[in-house]
Image 1 (tube, helix red, strand yellow):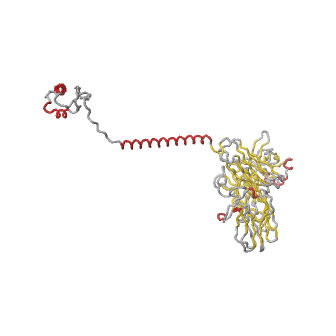
Image 2: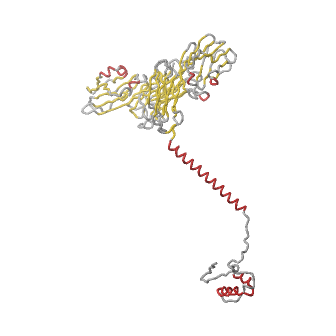
Image 3: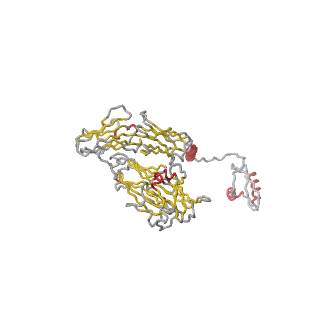
Length: 569
């Protein structure tokens, strides 16, 4: 059984989620609070005229308008639930400086309203007592004549905390929920497990947010954790309302049956917990497959103080024993990871007594194509259930929390049932999808799927740039090889000396140094007054002396130019 405790932060001397509340403000004068034996159940949300209450708990008074005039004044209610249609609940009239109310047929025809809301005698104030979650909404006092004018308005938010099983047995799953009647953009709901040993054990809780509700799925409750859970209503970074839930667990598993839901993923686990209150000599676990045509197969057995015999024919190393020897009371096993074909019925026998019977329903998500796709491709996501024995509901939810497609499953005994989501154009900005399985409107399991989408244009450019880079590397390698080959070839070549050739133009060697020429001709060099004269005389001297020596000279002509001298060959 779940036991509840709550704590309100309405009257603390600090601002509470207030866009319009100043620091140090306490409870406003137009909201009167009454305290129960344990807690106060009314808090402020965002402004002075936003109220929050817990389902069927707490008492409060909403004060009417300060300057109502002479009336008449209409009191209206627009609920958060249903179609949010406005309902006129009553009309106030002023008589001898006192106000009287005439209730409408809608007020009288809704028992929750007529039993929970009453006027304070002679005033415009309204007293709320044990208000139900369904009555949350917008409450308005308006001037009726000559024109309708809103005089005062409150928005009242309802909070409901629930558990899907009031008496869970050890090893079973439970789902806790915290729902707000309307979820403003700045308000959020949260669950947390209060367990001082949480860091020393495997995580067995999952939180999911759908619409206006925060769900906490607790797997194998009572197996390894203290069953105390905390919920809170929060706006931005401030806690408005918080409470705790302590779940009592039944530990007697004699002749107990329950159903577990598991996802076929790499991290999914199944705990097979079997405990007795007295010593027994023998124990065994049997399994009847949902898919294989076999009798109840013994997957593990043992005798007291003897090693456990594990049948690994089907489960292999996925079937793990959590103890070495049987102590006569506890016989627990673990299957990890859980596969889709593990669905079926698991039964524990201690001695000759039938103890716990667990029905396992598995869920899996597949994609076609299964590999990464390009943007714009068609993708089909399939969420499959191994068995449907009672009404269930499969839902595909987008990354922004919207329900895209859903399907109600009925007990048809036709094997696997499924729900497909066809994505006509894969988009990298919308690639996170979640399949949720509901049982009696309570989520039992959710499987997130991350669609792998790549940009086709980016991939094409990557290929082009890759090819260009490879081509550049090849060109550089070839150029380097050619360069090394040329260097090596030049190093192997020997210098060649050019032999003097005879009878080249029948002329003497060519000299560019006049001193060198003078040394070679010796006393035959005539004295001249200028370089031009020497060039002419020398030519004649060589011509007259050609028969004397075998040495031949070529002729050089020089031309004088200012300011320098250029030599022409």
